[in-house]
Length: 482
Length: 95
Image 1 (spheres, helix red, strand yellow):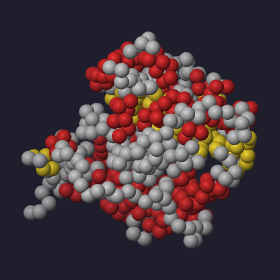
Image 2 (tube, each protein chain N blue to C red):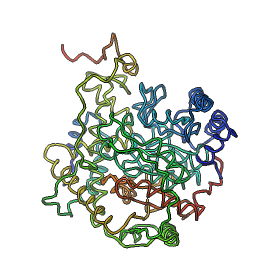
Image 3 (cartoon, chains in turn brown, orange):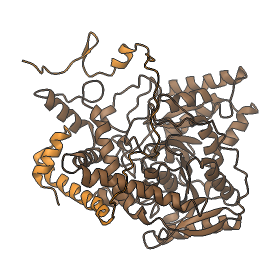
Image 4 (tube, one colour):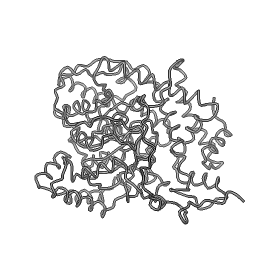
Protein backbone atom coordinates (compact mmCIF):
# COMPACT_ATOMS: atom_id res chain seq x y z
CA UNK A 1 0.00 0.00 0.00
CA UNK A 2 1.18 3.53 -0.74
CA UNK A 3 1.84 5.92 2.09
CA UNK A 4 -0.92 8.24 3.26
CA UNK A 5 -0.66 11.88 4.25
CA UNK A 6 -1.28 10.86 7.86
CA UNK A 7 1.44 8.18 7.86
CA UNK A 8 3.99 10.44 6.17
CA UNK A 9 3.12 13.28 8.55
CA UNK A 10 3.86 10.94 11.46
CA UNK A 11 7.20 9.93 9.89
CA UNK A 12 8.12 13.58 9.37
CA UNK A 13 7.16 14.50 12.94
CA UNK A 14 9.18 11.57 14.33
CA UNK A 15 12.22 12.53 12.27
CA UNK A 16 12.06 9.23 10.31
CA UNK A 17 11.85 11.12 7.04
CA UNK A 18 12.63 14.58 5.76
CA UNK A 19 10.61 16.66 3.33
CA UNK A 20 13.62 16.62 1.02
CA UNK A 21 13.74 12.79 0.99
CA UNK A 22 10.00 12.52 0.37
CA UNK A 23 10.14 15.11 -2.41
CA UNK A 24 13.17 13.50 -4.06
CA UNK A 25 11.42 10.12 -4.08
CA UNK A 26 8.13 11.53 -5.36
CA UNK A 27 9.91 13.48 -8.05
CA UNK A 28 11.72 10.35 -9.20
CA UNK A 29 8.39 8.50 -9.41
CA UNK A 30 6.84 11.41 -11.32
CA UNK A 31 9.75 11.50 -13.77
CA UNK A 32 9.63 7.74 -14.34
CA UNK A 33 5.84 7.65 -14.76
CA UNK A 34 4.32 7.05 -18.19
CA UNK A 35 0.78 8.09 -17.19
CA UNK A 36 1.22 11.70 -18.38
CA UNK A 37 -0.23 12.83 -15.04
CA UNK A 38 1.94 15.96 -14.96
CA UNK A 39 2.17 18.87 -17.37
CA UNK A 40 5.17 20.50 -15.72
CA UNK A 41 7.87 19.22 -13.39
CA UNK A 42 10.42 21.67 -12.04
CA UNK A 43 12.86 19.83 -9.79
CA UNK A 44 14.63 22.97 -8.64
CA UNK A 45 11.43 24.58 -7.37
CA UNK A 46 10.24 21.34 -5.80
CA UNK A 47 13.47 20.80 -3.91
CA UNK A 48 13.55 24.44 -2.78
CA UNK A 49 10.04 24.03 -1.36
CA UNK A 50 11.13 20.81 0.37
CA UNK A 51 14.16 22.48 1.92
CA UNK A 52 11.98 25.32 3.15
CA UNK A 53 9.64 22.78 4.76
CA UNK A 54 12.56 21.07 6.51
CA UNK A 55 13.91 24.44 7.66
CA UNK A 56 10.53 25.38 9.07
CA UNK A 57 10.42 22.08 10.95
CA UNK A 58 13.95 22.61 12.28
CA UNK A 59 12.84 26.04 13.53
CA UNK A 60 9.95 24.42 15.41
CA UNK A 61 7.36 25.96 13.13
CA UNK A 62 6.02 22.81 11.45
CA UNK A 63 2.28 22.31 11.15
CA UNK A 64 0.43 18.99 10.84
CA UNK A 65 1.22 18.50 7.12
CA UNK A 66 4.51 20.38 6.71
CA UNK A 67 6.73 18.53 4.24
CA UNK A 68 3.97 16.47 2.58
CA UNK A 69 4.52 16.15 -1.20
CA UNK A 70 1.50 16.77 -3.42
CA UNK A 71 0.42 17.44 -7.01
CA UNK A 72 -1.05 20.85 -7.77
CA UNK A 73 -3.76 20.89 -10.43
CA UNK A 74 -2.44 23.10 -13.24
CA UNK A 75 -5.38 25.48 -12.77
CA UNK A 76 -4.03 27.21 -9.65
CA UNK A 77 -1.69 30.13 -10.40
CA UNK A 78 1.62 29.66 -8.57
CA UNK A 79 4.16 32.44 -8.86
CA UNK A 80 7.07 31.40 -11.06
CA UNK A 81 5.46 28.11 -12.15
CA UNK A 82 4.18 27.61 -15.66
CA UNK A 83 0.38 27.54 -15.21
CA UNK A 84 -1.40 26.27 -18.33
CA UNK A 85 -4.91 25.09 -17.31
CA UNK A 86 -4.26 22.31 -19.84
CA UNK A 87 -4.48 24.81 -22.71
CA UNK A 88 -2.25 25.84 -25.57
CA UNK A 89 -3.64 29.32 -24.87
CA UNK A 90 -1.58 29.42 -21.66
CA UNK A 91 1.23 27.17 -22.89
CA UNK A 92 3.90 29.76 -22.02
CA UNK A 93 2.13 31.47 -19.14
CA UNK A 94 4.26 31.93 -16.03
CA UNK A 95 1.95 32.93 -13.20
CA UNK A 96 2.93 36.28 -11.70
CA UNK A 97 1.18 35.63 -8.37
CA UNK A 98 -0.05 32.89 -6.06
CA UNK A 99 -3.62 31.66 -5.92
CA UNK A 100 -4.92 31.67 -2.35
CA UNK A 101 -4.95 27.86 -2.39
CA UNK A 102 -1.26 27.95 -3.37
CA UNK A 103 -0.40 30.54 -0.71
CA UNK A 104 -2.23 28.52 1.95
CA UNK A 105 -0.42 25.37 0.82
CA UNK A 106 2.90 27.17 1.23
CA UNK A 107 1.93 28.37 4.70
CA UNK A 108 1.04 24.77 5.61
CA UNK A 109 4.42 23.58 4.27
CA UNK A 110 3.13 21.42 1.41
CA UNK A 111 5.72 20.61 -1.26
CA UNK A 112 4.66 20.85 -4.93
CA UNK A 113 5.94 17.83 -6.87
CA UNK A 114 4.50 19.07 -10.13
CA UNK A 115 1.59 20.55 -12.00
CA UNK A 116 -1.13 17.98 -12.58
CA UNK A 117 -2.60 17.42 -16.05
CA UNK A 118 -6.25 18.30 -16.60
CA UNK A 119 -8.92 18.80 -19.23
CA UNK A 120 -8.43 22.18 -20.89
CA UNK A 121 -9.87 24.90 -18.64
CA UNK A 122 -11.43 22.06 -16.61
CA UNK A 123 -13.89 21.30 -19.41
CA UNK A 124 -14.15 17.57 -19.72
CA UNK A 125 -14.83 14.31 -17.96
CA UNK A 126 -12.02 12.14 -19.28
CA UNK A 127 -8.86 14.28 -19.32
CA UNK A 128 -8.68 13.69 -23.08
CA UNK A 129 -9.27 17.42 -23.69
CA UNK A 130 -5.81 18.42 -22.45
CA UNK A 131 -3.57 20.21 -24.95
CA UNK A 132 -0.74 18.24 -23.31
CA UNK A 133 -2.17 14.81 -24.08
CA UNK A 134 -4.51 12.41 -22.33
CA UNK A 135 -3.73 10.93 -18.91
CA UNK A 136 -3.84 7.16 -18.46
CA UNK A 137 -5.71 5.45 -15.66
CA UNK A 138 -3.15 3.56 -13.51
CA UNK A 139 -5.63 0.70 -12.99
CA UNK A 140 -5.76 0.07 -16.72
CA UNK A 141 -3.66 2.27 -18.96
CA UNK A 142 -6.05 1.81 -21.89
CA UNK A 143 -8.73 3.68 -19.92
CA UNK A 144 -9.36 7.29 -18.96
CA UNK A 145 -8.67 8.53 -15.41
CA UNK A 146 -11.78 10.73 -15.48
CA UNK A 147 -11.74 14.48 -15.55
CA UNK A 148 -11.21 17.20 -15.35
CA UNK A 149 -8.84 16.58 -12.41
CA UNK A 150 -7.51 13.43 -14.11
CA UNK A 151 -3.81 14.06 -13.57
CA UNK A 152 -4.41 14.67 -9.87
CA UNK A 153 -6.40 11.44 -9.48
CA UNK A 154 -3.97 9.31 -11.50
CA UNK A 155 -0.93 10.65 -9.60
CA UNK A 156 -2.49 9.77 -6.24
CA UNK A 157 -3.83 6.37 -7.38
CA UNK A 158 -0.44 5.41 -8.82
CA UNK A 159 1.27 6.31 -5.54
CA UNK A 160 3.38 9.07 -7.09
CA UNK A 161 2.09 11.52 -4.48
CA UNK A 162 -0.14 10.95 -1.45
CA UNK A 163 -2.32 13.96 -2.22
CA UNK A 164 -3.38 16.45 -4.85
CA UNK A 165 -5.57 19.45 -5.37
CA UNK A 166 -8.53 19.38 -7.71
CA UNK A 167 -11.39 21.58 -8.79
CA UNK A 168 -15.00 20.58 -9.30
CA UNK A 169 -17.43 22.53 -11.48
CA UNK A 170 -19.70 19.64 -12.48
CA UNK A 171 -17.97 16.61 -10.93
CA UNK A 172 -14.30 17.18 -11.75
CA UNK A 173 -13.01 16.07 -8.33
CA UNK A 174 -15.52 13.31 -7.59
CA UNK A 175 -15.66 11.53 -10.95
CA UNK A 176 -11.87 11.09 -11.39
CA UNK A 177 -11.67 10.08 -7.72
CA UNK A 178 -14.27 7.41 -8.46
CA UNK A 179 -12.57 6.28 -11.70
CA UNK A 180 -9.15 6.03 -10.01
CA UNK A 181 -10.23 4.55 -6.66
CA UNK A 182 -9.25 7.43 -4.39
CA UNK A 183 -11.12 9.86 -2.13
CA UNK A 184 -11.94 13.42 -3.19
CA UNK A 185 -14.17 16.09 -1.71
CA UNK A 186 -15.80 19.11 -3.29
CA UNK A 187 -16.54 21.50 -0.43
CA UNK A 188 -19.56 23.79 -0.10
CA UNK A 189 -19.35 26.58 -2.66
CA UNK A 190 -17.45 29.47 -1.05
CA UNK A 191 -15.42 27.42 1.46
CA UNK A 192 -12.21 27.25 -0.61
CA UNK A 193 -11.07 30.50 -2.23
CA UNK A 194 -11.27 30.84 -6.00
CA UNK A 195 -8.71 33.64 -6.09
CA UNK A 196 -6.03 32.68 -8.60
CA UNK A 197 -7.92 29.55 -9.67
CA UNK A 198 -8.35 29.91 -13.44
CA UNK A 199 -12.07 30.40 -13.97
CA UNK A 200 -14.37 28.07 -15.89
CA UNK A 201 -17.87 28.70 -14.48
CA UNK A 202 -17.53 31.00 -11.52
CA UNK A 203 -20.85 30.27 -9.80
CA UNK A 204 -20.05 26.54 -9.78
CA UNK A 205 -16.23 26.23 -9.52
CA UNK A 206 -14.88 24.97 -6.22
CA UNK A 207 -11.43 23.66 -5.27
CA UNK A 208 -10.86 20.72 -2.96
CA UNK A 209 -8.44 17.95 -1.94
CA UNK A 210 -7.93 14.49 -3.41
CA UNK A 211 -6.10 11.74 -1.52
CA UNK A 212 -6.21 8.07 -0.67
CA UNK A 213 -8.29 8.39 2.50
CA UNK A 214 -11.02 10.59 3.95
CA UNK A 215 -8.72 11.38 6.88
CA UNK A 216 -6.09 12.70 4.46
CA UNK A 217 -8.71 14.82 2.69
CA UNK A 218 -9.71 16.30 6.06
CA UNK A 219 -6.08 17.18 6.87
CA UNK A 220 -5.66 18.88 3.49
CA UNK A 221 -8.99 20.67 3.63
CA UNK A 222 -7.92 22.18 6.96
CA UNK A 223 -5.10 23.86 5.05
CA UNK A 224 -7.11 24.82 1.93
CA UNK A 225 -10.34 26.18 3.41
CA UNK A 226 -10.96 29.60 4.89
CA UNK A 227 -12.30 33.06 4.24
CA UNK A 228 -10.48 35.10 1.62
CA UNK A 229 -11.32 38.73 1.04
CA UNK A 230 -9.87 38.47 -2.48
CA UNK A 231 -12.65 36.12 -3.56
CA UNK A 232 -15.94 38.03 -3.70
CA UNK A 233 -17.94 34.84 -3.05
CA UNK A 234 -15.75 33.48 -0.26
CA UNK A 235 -17.85 32.84 2.83
CA UNK A 236 -17.01 34.54 6.10
CA UNK A 237 -17.10 31.72 8.65
CA UNK A 238 -15.19 30.57 11.70
CA UNK A 239 -12.37 28.19 10.73
CA UNK A 240 -13.25 24.52 11.20
CA UNK A 241 -11.23 21.44 12.03
CA UNK A 242 -12.45 18.98 9.39
CA UNK A 243 -10.90 16.05 11.28
CA UNK A 244 -12.98 16.69 14.40
CA UNK A 245 -15.79 14.23 13.67
CA UNK A 246 -13.87 11.50 11.83
CA UNK A 247 -14.37 8.89 14.55
CA UNK A 248 -17.98 9.73 15.35
CA UNK A 249 -20.21 6.62 15.29
CA UNK A 250 -22.78 6.42 12.50
CA UNK A 251 -25.60 5.12 14.71
CA UNK A 252 -28.88 6.57 13.56
CA UNK A 253 -27.37 8.32 10.53
CA UNK A 254 -30.11 8.68 7.92
CA UNK A 255 -28.70 7.91 4.47
CA UNK A 256 -31.01 9.10 1.71
CA UNK A 257 -30.91 7.17 -1.56
CA UNK A 258 -32.65 9.05 -4.36
CA UNK A 259 -35.31 6.97 -6.07
CA UNK A 260 -34.08 6.08 -9.55
CA UNK A 261 -30.39 6.60 -8.89
CA UNK A 262 -29.76 2.88 -8.68
CA UNK A 263 -32.05 2.01 -11.57
CA UNK A 264 -31.53 1.41 -15.25
CA UNK A 265 -29.37 4.50 -15.71
CA UNK A 266 -26.47 2.93 -13.88
CA UNK A 267 -24.53 -0.16 -14.97
CA UNK A 268 -24.98 -3.37 -12.97
CA UNK A 269 -21.39 -3.48 -11.69
CA UNK A 270 -21.53 0.10 -10.38
CA UNK A 271 -24.93 -0.58 -8.80
CA UNK A 272 -23.57 -3.66 -7.02
CA UNK A 273 -20.55 -1.79 -5.65
CA UNK A 274 -22.67 1.14 -4.46
CA UNK A 275 -25.15 -1.28 -2.85
CA UNK A 276 -22.29 -2.94 -0.99
CA UNK A 277 -21.15 0.46 0.25
CA UNK A 278 -24.66 1.23 1.43
CA UNK A 279 -24.85 -2.17 3.15
CA UNK A 280 -21.61 -1.38 5.00
CA UNK A 281 -23.05 1.91 6.19
CA UNK A 282 -26.14 0.07 7.48
CA UNK A 283 -23.89 -2.38 9.34
CA UNK A 284 -22.25 0.65 10.94
CA UNK A 285 -25.62 1.75 12.28
CA UNK A 286 -26.92 3.96 9.48
CA UNK A 287 -30.52 3.81 8.37
CA UNK A 288 -31.37 3.82 4.68
CA UNK A 289 -34.27 5.99 3.56
CA UNK A 290 -35.69 6.52 0.10
CA UNK A 291 -35.81 10.13 -1.03
CA UNK A 292 -37.01 11.96 -4.12
CA UNK A 293 -35.13 14.54 -6.14
CA UNK A 294 -37.78 15.06 -8.81
CA UNK A 295 -36.03 17.90 -10.60
CA UNK A 296 -32.63 16.23 -10.70
CA UNK A 297 -33.43 14.84 -14.17
CA UNK A 298 -33.30 18.40 -15.53
CA UNK A 299 -30.08 19.35 -13.78
CA UNK A 300 -27.73 18.18 -16.48
CA UNK A 301 -29.56 20.28 -19.08
CA UNK A 302 -29.43 23.35 -16.84
CA UNK A 303 -25.75 22.70 -16.13
CA UNK A 304 -24.91 22.60 -19.84
CA UNK A 305 -26.50 26.05 -20.18
CA UNK A 306 -25.12 27.75 -17.08
CA UNK A 307 -21.55 26.42 -17.23
CA UNK A 308 -20.97 27.25 -20.94
CA UNK A 309 -22.66 30.66 -20.46
CA UNK A 310 -20.29 31.55 -17.63
CA UNK A 311 -17.37 30.03 -19.55
CA UNK A 312 -18.05 32.12 -22.64
CA UNK A 313 -17.93 35.21 -20.46
CA UNK A 314 -14.88 34.16 -18.40
CA UNK A 315 -12.87 33.05 -21.41
CA UNK A 316 -13.44 36.30 -23.28
CA UNK A 317 -10.37 37.56 -21.42
CA UNK A 318 -8.13 35.45 -23.67
CA UNK A 319 -7.69 37.87 -26.53
CA UNK A 320 -3.99 37.57 -27.35
CA UNK A 321 -3.28 41.03 -25.99
CA UNK A 322 -2.27 40.93 -22.33
CA UNK A 323 -1.17 37.31 -21.99
CA UNK A 324 -1.68 33.99 -23.68
CA UNK A 325 -1.36 32.79 -27.24
CA UNK A 326 -1.30 35.33 -30.08
CA UNK A 327 -1.67 34.20 -33.69
CA UNK A 328 1.41 34.73 -35.85
CA UNK A 329 -0.49 36.28 -38.74
CA UNK A 330 -3.55 38.55 -38.82
CA UNK A 331 -4.94 41.44 -40.83
CA UNK A 332 -6.27 43.63 -38.05
CA UNK A 333 -7.25 43.64 -34.38
CA UNK A 334 -10.54 41.75 -34.85
CA UNK A 335 -8.76 39.13 -36.94
CA UNK A 336 -6.05 38.85 -34.29
CA UNK A 337 -8.65 38.14 -31.59
CA UNK A 338 -10.50 35.57 -33.69
CA UNK A 339 -7.38 33.72 -34.88
CA UNK A 340 -5.59 33.80 -31.51
CA UNK A 341 -8.67 32.33 -29.83
CA UNK A 342 -9.34 29.72 -32.53
CA UNK A 343 -5.70 28.57 -32.38
CA UNK A 344 -5.28 28.77 -28.59
CA UNK A 345 -8.44 26.92 -27.56
CA UNK A 346 -9.04 23.23 -28.21
CA UNK A 347 -12.24 21.82 -29.76
CA UNK A 348 -14.22 21.23 -26.54
CA UNK A 349 -13.46 24.70 -25.18
CA UNK A 350 -14.49 26.25 -28.49
CA UNK A 351 -17.72 24.22 -28.43
CA UNK A 352 -18.61 25.37 -24.93
CA UNK A 353 -17.82 29.00 -25.78
CA UNK A 354 -20.14 28.75 -28.78
CA UNK A 355 -22.94 27.15 -26.76
CA UNK A 356 -22.52 29.77 -24.04
CA UNK A 357 -22.46 32.62 -26.50
CA UNK A 358 -25.59 31.28 -28.17
CA UNK A 359 -27.65 30.82 -24.99
CA UNK A 360 -26.73 34.33 -23.85
CA UNK A 361 -27.40 35.96 -27.22
CA UNK A 362 -30.30 38.33 -27.83
CA UNK A 363 -33.60 36.52 -28.21
CA UNK A 364 -32.47 33.28 -26.54
CA UNK A 365 -31.49 34.50 -23.07
CA UNK A 366 -34.91 33.91 -21.46
CA UNK A 367 -35.54 30.56 -23.10
CA UNK A 368 -32.16 29.16 -22.09
CA UNK A 369 -30.24 31.07 -19.45
CA UNK A 370 -33.15 32.32 -17.37
CA UNK A 371 -34.90 28.95 -17.65
CA UNK A 372 -31.71 27.18 -16.51
CA UNK A 373 -31.50 29.46 -13.48
CA UNK A 374 -35.08 28.59 -12.61
CA UNK A 375 -34.29 24.89 -12.89
CA UNK A 376 -31.30 25.55 -10.66
CA UNK A 377 -33.59 26.96 -7.95
CA UNK A 378 -35.84 23.88 -8.13
CA UNK A 379 -32.84 21.55 -7.91
CA UNK A 380 -31.63 23.39 -4.80
CA UNK A 381 -35.13 23.21 -3.30
CA UNK A 382 -35.22 19.46 -3.98
CA UNK A 383 -32.11 19.03 -1.88
CA UNK A 384 -33.43 21.28 0.89
CA UNK A 385 -36.57 19.10 1.10
CA UNK A 386 -34.48 15.90 1.05
CA UNK A 387 -32.29 17.06 3.93
CA UNK A 388 -35.38 17.33 6.12
CA UNK A 389 -35.65 13.54 6.08
CA UNK A 390 -32.01 12.44 5.74
CA UNK A 391 -28.54 13.52 6.92
CA UNK A 392 -26.52 12.56 3.85
CA UNK A 393 -27.46 11.47 0.35
CA UNK A 394 -25.70 8.47 -1.20
CA UNK A 395 -25.53 6.99 -4.66
CA UNK A 396 -23.23 6.48 -7.63
CA UNK A 397 -20.79 9.15 -8.86
CA UNK A 398 -20.98 8.09 -12.50
CA UNK A 399 -23.10 5.57 -14.44
CA UNK A 400 -20.11 3.35 -15.28
CA UNK A 401 -16.52 2.62 -14.32
CA UNK A 402 -13.74 4.36 -16.27
CA UNK A 403 -14.20 3.84 -19.99
CA UNK A 404 -11.58 3.29 -22.67
CA UNK A 405 -9.44 6.12 -24.00
CA UNK A 406 -11.06 7.36 -27.21
CA UNK A 407 -14.37 5.63 -26.50
CA UNK A 408 -16.42 8.79 -26.03
CA UNK A 409 -14.38 11.46 -27.77
CA UNK A 410 -16.41 11.28 -30.98
CA UNK A 411 -19.63 12.22 -29.23
CA UNK A 412 -19.29 14.99 -26.62
CA UNK A 413 -22.97 14.81 -25.71
CA UNK A 414 -22.57 11.15 -24.66
CA UNK A 415 -19.74 12.26 -22.40
CA UNK A 416 -21.90 15.03 -20.90
CA UNK A 417 -24.51 12.42 -19.90
CA UNK A 418 -21.90 10.79 -17.65
CA UNK A 419 -22.17 13.86 -15.40
CA UNK A 420 -25.79 13.07 -14.52
CA UNK A 421 -25.18 12.45 -10.78
CA UNK A 422 -22.62 15.17 -10.17
CA UNK A 423 -23.68 18.43 -11.84
CA UNK A 424 -26.80 18.91 -9.72
CA UNK A 425 -24.64 19.14 -6.60
CA UNK A 426 -22.70 22.07 -8.09
CA UNK A 427 -25.91 23.82 -9.13
CA UNK A 428 -27.03 23.73 -5.49
CA UNK A 429 -23.52 24.53 -4.17
CA UNK A 430 -23.51 21.58 -1.75
CA UNK A 431 -20.50 19.64 -0.46
CA UNK A 432 -20.00 16.10 -1.80
CA UNK A 433 -17.32 13.44 -1.94
CA UNK A 434 -16.44 10.23 -3.67
CA UNK A 435 -15.00 7.38 -1.60
CA UNK A 436 -14.05 3.92 -2.95
CA UNK A 437 -16.77 1.29 -2.33
CA UNK A 438 -15.70 -1.60 -4.53
CA UNK A 439 -14.70 -2.70 -7.99
CA UNK A 440 -16.63 -3.26 -11.17
CA UNK A 441 -16.12 -4.36 -14.76
CA UNK A 442 -12.49 -5.02 -15.64
CA UNK A 443 -11.47 -4.69 -11.98
CA UNK A 444 -11.97 -0.92 -12.16
CA UNK A 445 -12.70 1.07 -8.99
CA UNK A 446 -16.14 2.43 -8.12
CA UNK A 447 -16.78 5.41 -5.85
CA UNK A 448 -19.65 5.98 -3.45
CA UNK A 449 -21.08 9.46 -3.87
CA UNK A 450 -21.97 11.17 -0.60
CA UNK A 451 -23.71 14.54 -0.69
CA UNK A 452 -24.25 16.64 2.42
CA UNK A 453 -26.14 19.74 3.40
CA UNK A 454 -24.30 23.09 3.32
CA UNK A 455 -21.15 23.01 5.47
CA UNK A 456 -21.51 19.29 6.23
CA UNK A 457 -17.95 18.53 5.05
CA UNK A 458 -16.92 17.15 8.47
CA UNK A 459 -19.98 14.89 8.47
CA UNK A 460 -19.26 13.56 4.96
CA UNK A 461 -15.62 12.91 5.85
CA UNK A 462 -16.80 11.18 9.04
CA UNK A 463 -19.06 8.82 7.05
CA UNK A 464 -16.32 8.06 4.51
CA UNK A 465 -13.73 7.55 7.27
CA UNK A 466 -15.92 5.07 9.16
CA UNK A 467 -16.54 3.23 5.90
CA UNK A 468 -12.78 3.13 5.29
CA UNK A 469 -12.21 1.59 8.71
CA UNK A 470 -14.29 -1.46 7.83
CA UNK A 471 -13.36 -1.74 4.13
CA UNK A 472 -10.04 -1.76 2.31
CA UNK A 473 -10.99 -0.67 -1.22
CA UNK A 474 -9.21 2.65 -0.71
CA UNK A 475 -5.98 0.89 0.26
CA UNK A 476 -5.80 -1.28 -2.85
CA UNK A 477 -3.32 -0.06 -5.40
CA UNK A 478 -3.23 -0.70 -9.12
CA UNK A 479 -1.10 -3.67 -10.11
CA UNK A 480 0.79 -1.99 -12.91
CA UNK A 481 3.69 0.34 -12.31
CA UNK A 482 3.19 4.09 -12.26
CA UNK B 1 -35.41 24.89 -33.34
CA UNK B 2 -32.18 23.54 -34.86
CA UNK B 3 -29.44 26.00 -35.76
CA UNK B 4 -28.47 26.80 -39.34
CA UNK B 5 -24.94 27.21 -40.75
CA UNK B 6 -25.51 30.97 -40.67
CA UNK B 7 -26.31 30.81 -36.95
CA UNK B 8 -22.97 29.07 -36.39
CA UNK B 9 -21.13 31.80 -38.32
CA UNK B 10 -22.95 34.49 -36.35
CA UNK B 11 -22.29 32.92 -32.94
CA UNK B 12 -18.63 32.33 -33.84
CA UNK B 13 -18.32 35.99 -34.79
CA UNK B 14 -19.95 37.07 -31.50
CA UNK B 15 -17.52 34.80 -29.64
CA UNK B 16 -14.54 36.16 -31.62
CA UNK B 17 -13.63 32.66 -32.76
CA UNK B 18 -12.36 32.16 -36.29
CA UNK B 19 -14.11 29.20 -37.90
CA UNK B 20 -13.12 27.61 -41.19
CA UNK B 21 -15.85 26.77 -43.70
CA UNK B 22 -15.14 23.04 -43.42
CA UNK B 23 -15.66 23.23 -39.63
CA UNK B 24 -19.18 24.65 -39.93
CA UNK B 25 -20.98 21.37 -40.59
CA UNK B 26 -19.43 19.30 -37.76
CA UNK B 27 -19.79 22.26 -35.35
CA UNK B 28 -23.43 22.64 -36.33
CA UNK B 29 -24.01 18.96 -35.66
CA UNK B 30 -22.55 18.98 -32.13
CA UNK B 31 -24.22 22.27 -31.24
CA UNK B 32 -27.60 20.93 -32.33
CA UNK B 33 -27.11 17.75 -30.33
CA UNK B 34 -26.06 19.78 -27.28
CA UNK B 35 -29.13 21.96 -27.66
CA UNK B 36 -31.19 18.75 -27.89
CA UNK B 37 -29.90 17.81 -24.44
CA UNK B 38 -30.52 21.34 -23.16
CA UNK B 39 -34.07 21.38 -24.56
CA UNK B 40 -35.04 18.70 -22.02
CA UNK B 41 -35.53 21.65 -19.66
CA UNK B 42 -38.55 22.56 -21.73
CA UNK B 43 -40.40 19.65 -20.12
CA UNK B 44 -40.36 21.40 -16.77
CA UNK B 45 -42.85 24.01 -15.64
CA UNK B 46 -40.90 26.89 -14.15
CA UNK B 47 -43.62 29.54 -14.18
CA UNK B 48 -43.09 31.97 -11.32
CA UNK B 49 -39.82 30.39 -10.12
CA UNK B 50 -37.28 32.96 -9.00
CA UNK B 51 -34.07 32.48 -11.05
CA UNK B 52 -31.06 31.35 -8.99
CA UNK B 53 -27.89 33.05 -10.18
CA UNK B 54 -25.65 31.75 -7.49
CA UNK B 55 -25.06 28.68 -5.39
CA UNK B 56 -26.01 30.56 -2.27
CA UNK B 57 -28.23 33.57 -2.07
CA UNK B 58 -25.74 35.72 -0.23
CA UNK B 59 -25.25 39.37 -0.97
CA UNK B 60 -21.76 40.35 -1.99
CA UNK B 61 -19.51 42.07 0.53
CA UNK B 62 -18.39 45.64 0.19
CA UNK B 63 -14.93 46.76 1.16
CA UNK B 64 -13.52 50.22 1.79
CA UNK B 65 -12.69 52.01 -1.46
CA UNK B 66 -8.96 51.98 -0.85
CA UNK B 67 -5.87 50.94 -2.81
CA UNK B 68 -4.88 47.43 -1.69
CA UNK B 69 -2.55 46.23 -4.47
CA UNK B 70 1.02 47.42 -4.96
CA UNK B 71 2.31 48.44 -8.39
CA UNK B 72 3.48 45.23 -10.07
CA UNK B 73 3.27 46.42 -13.65
CA UNK B 74 6.44 44.78 -14.90
CA UNK B 75 5.65 41.40 -13.36
CA UNK B 76 2.09 41.48 -14.66
CA UNK B 77 3.20 42.45 -18.16
CA UNK B 78 5.92 39.81 -18.41
CA UNK B 79 3.49 37.43 -20.16
CA UNK B 80 2.39 39.94 -22.80
CA UNK B 81 2.81 38.71 -26.40
CA UNK B 82 3.97 42.22 -27.37
CA UNK B 83 4.74 45.14 -25.05
CA UNK B 84 6.78 48.28 -25.12
CA UNK B 85 7.43 50.96 -22.49
CA UNK B 86 4.72 49.60 -20.22
CA UNK B 87 2.12 49.38 -22.95
CA UNK B 88 0.46 46.37 -24.59
CA UNK B 89 0.97 46.47 -28.35
CA UNK B 90 -1.89 45.65 -30.73
CA UNK B 91 -2.35 46.15 -34.48
CA UNK B 92 -3.18 49.71 -35.46
CA UNK B 93 -6.91 50.39 -35.01
CA UNK B 94 -7.06 54.05 -36.14
CA UNK B 95 -5.65 55.01 -39.53
